[in-house]
Length: 446
Image 1 (cartoon, rainbow, N blue to C red):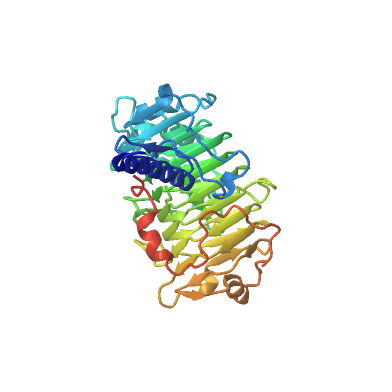
Image 2: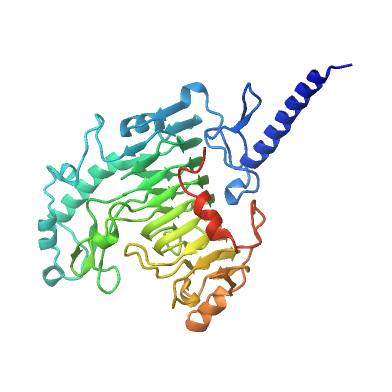
């Protein structure tokens, strides 16, 4: 008969196995059991849990979980990140641990680069550009000629430095406790499959050389080039526990030329050009204007653009949370705060257009005094928004009915699909603002 101490030891080992199994089911993979019997999640090898949104469809999303030791990197500089990413054609699984904040606007030696450095030798100056394309003399036609060519050349030099091309089968994760993130950079996930991006702060993604487009709208616009994270023709992507912000330079600090803001910020996380099977969860989006674009045009890609967005915080966001075209979009358990923050005054939250099929359920909106629920949605008369259980200041509200009562272009109320990949769905949005305030964004995972 086994001794009491042996029975206790056996019981502890069984408990460890059970705990590991439970944790594995909760996190998707990557459980470590220590010699002391404790269990911890291996953040770097975790994969997307089953049924956790559209990215769990089909083969699921595993990123670089199968990386061998030669393809696990810890990076702290731009040059190290570039080397770790390697060639976009190399699909070998890889894990990249980002330690600290990487400044994308640096050269290979770590020297800080400025807008003047990118413009050097191109012939571009802002003063010359403004003089060349002043609408009073140039008119409403698109810029062309010497200064536009010089602007494009300078912009290309910046792009070569700050755009990081992510290959397939890659996991990029911030090391906990290091303020991990990328400042001034743009992760480009283009034409590849199976990518995970977690626990990173993306800040200050700025275009030194915005382009003037006098044909954009009735008064023209300054348009910039870089999203903090851009998905173009990408599939099976999981973006989890990241923070997206314009800080420290806000739109309210921008100068005005030709009567329009000199906009240096583009999107925070854009999903375009036929991207598909994407899950965006437990992120914080703050201090930004055009935040998330799903579908780059009304003819982007029918049958794709399937995206799940859940348990995110949107605060200090002007618009596009998200703007959806064509695809099947599921938004659940998100918390929206539409209070103006550092000059970012909300226009709307969700825009459904170009026959987008949006299901928005059990989300929570916090509106300041006097704000109207009718302004939480937007559309072109062809998109749909279905779903129930949405709360506005704690009160269940039919968002589409409120919008349609105040607008001539009606949002449709039925969609052509039923969400089934709904891991973690909470059927009450009552406590979401408080819960998500401390459980979302970079720096939470350990």
